Image (cartoon, rainbow, N blue to C red; front, side):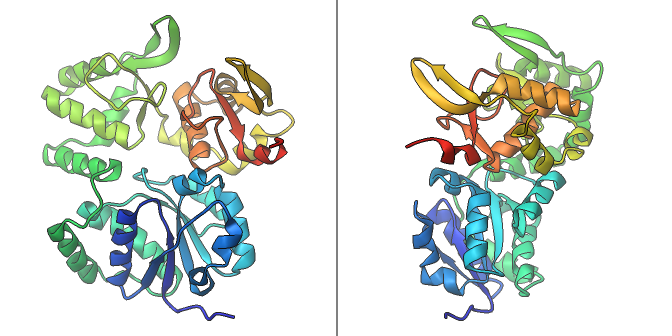
Length: 364
């Protein structure tokens, strides 16, 4: 039997650039990290010598989904094959993880959920995430001086991964901070009585409930806080990147245009929701209606409709529309269910979704 190395991580990440980032960050702390490929055969993964000697593994949720796996499935498999291995699931496009999501992770047997990170914002994003992992194998706390030296070299040589949503969010935050703008104060005012105009709207004959127009939100910020328009736009882009607002179909970035967005829910509403209970209740006796459905002459077995699920979440948990969509989106990102052809996020819509656990009941 292979002997596990004292400080050794397996990296199952979606890109070679991310692998290089994390190998360098771990190396700055004297911890070895090796990239391990993920295929559609978990037995092949279990037979990889690097998995046999690793103390912990970092897995990208989108990579698991791309290969047809759920986090629950992979966690259970690896825990059975490698007892004692610490597993960290990363949501690379997220800037933060809620307490409810961390509670879901613990219930699933994960050491922790991790947000995405950026070397350019290493103190706020890379260091705490790295610290959580190295401390799990007794190799922490993080030596920030050594990490900073490595980050400076990575930035100097251009070896940091290309800009992405997390890096953009931290750059927006820096810009807003320099201009004395507190995003939390903005979103609280925008989503309060007398805030940004929210109404039921129609586009090309299709109704969209309880939403606001992006350009009107910028108008409101300019008038209410006296912001220059480019700065108001930057503030809204930051709110979108950090999940405080979302496009009604989750198909557009925030822009100064006639686009419809929703508030994603107040923190108090989102934090009181137990995602483990929601997951069980949705598939339970009085949960969402799961049935065979047809669209454009194609049949989709064992699925539910976005409209129905949003309404069910709103009624069961006394949530506003945007918050119900956020709860559903979090479960989708955690691999609990997905759009039947993986083309849409979770929104109030006629889109079909299916629980990953129900995939096994569908004949090939």
